[in-house]
Structure formats: C-alpha cells, structure tokens
Length: 416
Image (cartoon, rainbow, N blue to C red):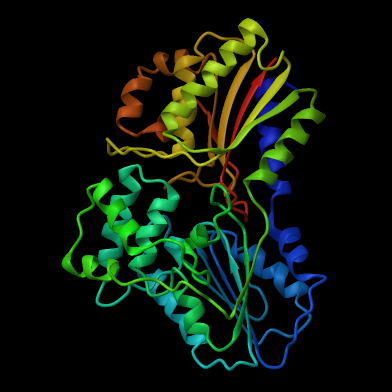
C-alpha cells in the first residue's frame, strides 16, 4: 500500500476501534443495579444512537422510556422502544429546544424508585439545551456563535454555556430528582474533565460565575442584560443522585492509531493526546516535525508515524466553509511543500469537521502545487476560512460519514 492509503487505513482503524458499543457494554456489565421502578434511557450527542443501542442490549431490565437526541443524519434507523429526535449542531435550533423539552417531560414524574441511564457524547452541549430564565433560542445562538468564532477552547465555551442553561452544569440531575441517574459519558474533553463533557448536565459544576464572567470579558463577548443576570446565578455544586462513569476517550483513540500504524510497518510515537492550540499553528508544528525526521531522524527514523490527539481551535476571519482539521491540514501543506514520502492528516473521530460533511483533510508534499495549478492560494484560503472547497478541488478531503462516536480529533504524520 502507498503512504496515502496507509494514512487513511490508520485513521479508519482507530476510529472503528473507538466506537461506543464496547465502551457502554463495559460500563454496564458487571455492575449491580437495583431496579425497583421505571427505567428511563436518555441519550444525547453525536454518538447517542450507538450508545442507546448498546445500552438497550445490555441493561438487565426492560426499558420503560427511551429517547435519543442526536445530530441530523446521525441516527441509524429505528430502535425499538426509543423516540429518535435530531437537531442542529454546532448551533442549536428549534428542534434542539423541542427535543430537550421532550426529554424533560420524560423525567418530570419520576420517583426515588426509578432509574435514569443518561448516555452522553460529544455534541451534547449544542444538542441538549433549554435556555435559563427568560433567555431565548436566539440568545443561545448568539452566544454560541460568538464563542465558536472567538477562539475559546471547549472548556471555556462550556463554562459560559452552562451558566446560561437550565439543563447544563448539574441542573438536569436536579430535574431528575429524586430518581437515581447513572451517567455514562464518552469524553471529548481533553483531560476528561467530567463537568465539561456536554457541559455536565448531571455533574456537579466546578466552574463559577466569576470564571464565566472572566471568559466573557477575555473574548469580548456581547452580553444582554438577561445574559449578565443569568451568569450571576450559580450552578449546582453537588449532585447526590448521580453515579458517573467516563468511558472512551482520545487517549484510547491515539493508542489504537499507534497499533494500526505498527501493523503497517511504521514505528509509532504518540506525541500528545492533549493538543490544544490554533489549527494553523498545529499544522505548522507537524510539518516542522516532518522536516526534523527527514533531516536528522529525530524523534524517529522513517518509516514512522507521529500521532497526536486533541482539539484545536480556529479564529474565524472569513466567510468560507471549512473546519479545524481541514485548516490544520492545509497549513501543514504549506510547510511540507516539495517533500517526498510525507503525509499529514487530521480527522474528527465523529466524521464531521465544523459545519461540513468531511471528517478532515489529508495532504502531501504535492498539495500546494496541485492547488497552485488551479490558481488557489493556501494563504488566501486560510484567511477566508475556506479550506473545504480547496481540499475538495484536489480530492484531499477525508470522508468517513457519521461514525457514531466522538472522542476528539486525530492528527497523523507519516514519513517513509
């Protein structure tokens, strides 16, 4: 196989190994549950359908109510006993609000005899939302859009959003009281901070009002009077009716990528599973590693695979179409131009990168020349945030379709 095919296979194998079925099965089997009343299963996020299916197959009790709330196109058909709802991501929409209300109605009459299995995956912050106080969907769209464009990291974004929400930051756990909530979470948060996964609907919130206000000031967010009032209301600091288990993460994604690379004859090195910087800078960094490998054989001699996991950010300066992984790839392409036997690839484990149908991008030492033949400037494309159209023009998008999981992003450098 050639180096491009190898890169695609490594990414596909790693993502396949990170699907949530086994993670949910592991979290349920071997546990002792006391089912005295109704069993409710609520699944939110991009991996909600897969998690719900696995839960239905492994919970040792009939499910009385089941609701799945996931991103458009991420449900994989009917699931017996479940109401399947789809809504907007990365921006919430009317279906977000109505879907969340359906969930709230499903837990509105619970007793201390009842059990809620709450299955959480990445994307839950946008998909599961009920504005607090007098805030509206328009307000939530505005603040989410500002945060996405600001360059704030996911923890900062979620700190603000959960203080403006009636279901985040432990507030959903309070709404389920007095029932016990068993939360199973796939982590898309670097370091697996529990109260930031989907903005922690059932998790005691470690962030404070003052931190939320400081983030708003840091990124010069425009806040209405109602938003300011809600930021001053503290979130729950204890959730006594919740048991939480985090299963599946970017750490496992990187480990599976390393195994796949080794099987193809590449010496793997997991450089970090907490990459957190601007996408364009991450692309330049991986390109610099490639140059050092080819020049000095450091930190590995070819054939080798340098693997990173994490989640970069993009500062929006243009009005084009793209995502952080596509920007990372194009930025790397600029720096590895002319190099042979080098591939840089970046992919979202959920199969979607920003508001696009691509998981990310894959580039080589010839990518820049291929674009120049079409009169496409990488500098201009990055300034316009229009990476999708550039990569599509030279067939360099990574297309996986919705994968059913979401454990951050995978970055791969192959050198032969």
